[in-house]
Amino acid sequence: MRFSMIPVVLAQMLKKPFTNKFPVKYAPSSPSRFLEKVEKGEIKINPPVPVPERFRGRITYDKDKCIGCRLCLQVCPSEAIEYKTEEKKIRIYLARCTFCAQCNEVCPVSCLSMSNEFLLSDTDKYSNSLIVE
Amino acid sequence: MRGASKTTYQLPIGPIHPALKEPVMFEFKVDGERIIDVDVKLGQVHRGIEWAGTRRNPIQILYLAERICGICSYCHPMSFALAVERAAGIEVPERAQYLRVIQGELERICSHVLWAGVAAHEIGFDSVLFLTWEIREKGLDLTEYLTGNRVTKGITMIGGVRRDITDDMVPKVKQALDYLKEKIDKVQHVFLNDKTIKLRCRDCGVLTKEDALKLCAVGPTARASGVKKDVRLDQGYFAYTDLDFDYVTPDIITGEVKGDVYDRVIVRLLEVKQSINLIEQCLEQMPKGDIVSEPKIPKLLATLKRVNGEGIGRMEAPRGEVFHYVRFTGTGNPYAWKVRAPTYNNILPWIPMLLDQQIADIPIVAASTDPCMSCTNRVAIISNNKRYIMNSEELHRLSIEKTRRLSI
Image (cartoon, rainbow over all chains, first blue to last red):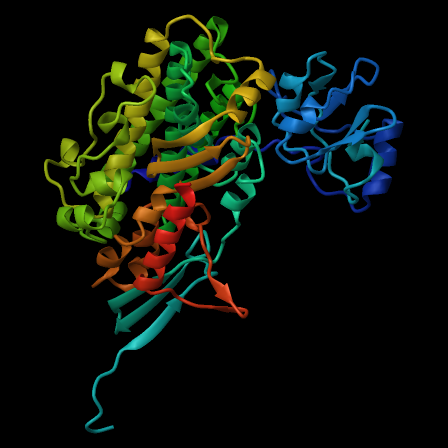
């Protein structure tokens, strides 16, 4: 066929758009008011595309289990982990984290794990929501 | 004006230009619409990755190497791992060899399909761009399912891979491969039979076999010119020696080798099909066993700390041969790390390709080698805030100095 894309394009016109409009179809005029309404339950959020199994999201840290062996500091490629000398525990800066889960694998007591949480944006890279300790 | 001689015009394109996806500087000399001279200037995106690597241990470098290139985010760390394994004498289990092939071929599928879309976009055929990227989406979904991430996969480990493909995952992988196979046939039909693509790509940006050999072109660029060169077959790393496949040259479909952009399209599309076939072969033949030779990372790091020696890792990336050299002196961190990305070899072939072409063909000819500039840029020479170009004597002197430094 000389112009073989034409049937494909015509068929495409009848299909539903693939994009998942997360969290809402149109940007709200005021995000803070929008969030208030969501909290009250007036507006429903369009759910995100589900993450796959074994997804590497925000790190969770079980502080009580940690023995302070510092192995995770050795393997972290972006030096996102800080050692708190007095407490003998660690602090993870998510703004630097590359989500490779190498620290999870090296941990001898499995106190680190990856969750499914991926909404991590913040205006301040040192904000409390981006520091795990 | 009477008596004035006909002059040529200088046409600079880049470093930032809508037709180029990444920063590279072209200086063309044009006579009307015809290009009569080309000069390429590199070094716009030097990031000092090799330097940063010498301050990290091999496990950390895996993730740094992953960030050399966004599309070849598997080849670079894997090639580095090959180099380290050779330096340290680490044996990789057989199952890991097969898993490595699967990941590598999956990356090739994603990369080539992405390239097909970009090439279509460069000639203004945007409906094909959306068709190909729809397929790539499935390829990325499969990547995400197998590795946990869509782009920076984090699957490489020295002495194996980090994630296994268990038996319950196989049906889903096969289903995705069937989808890809069906859709690739559709894309191939569009690329091979559509008039628009033939008009723009046939006899455009020709690289002859002699030039390809002389200028050391690699990967699909070389194979499209009829050079049978493929590290997977020539060197036989991973499990490639156990798999059944052959060099892809455009004459399989057209019966002749012209070395133009159209041939490069054919080679890449055929390679996608070959990759799907290779993954299927791997899934069938894969033996049971370990996926990594040393699962305890502290022990692995201790082994690597004692290594004193050098190693190279060669691998066929989607764009051609990628080469990593690493040297350890017993400190744990590499003393030297050298990366040669495939685009480095495919820069000089641009010059014969672009000569005598029209200005409007620059984007598609430049894109036809699938360039990746930020992977290539390993050096930028600046003195007193000014860039300057080194001549061959200076380079030779530096080269001798470096060899002496490395051979202590």
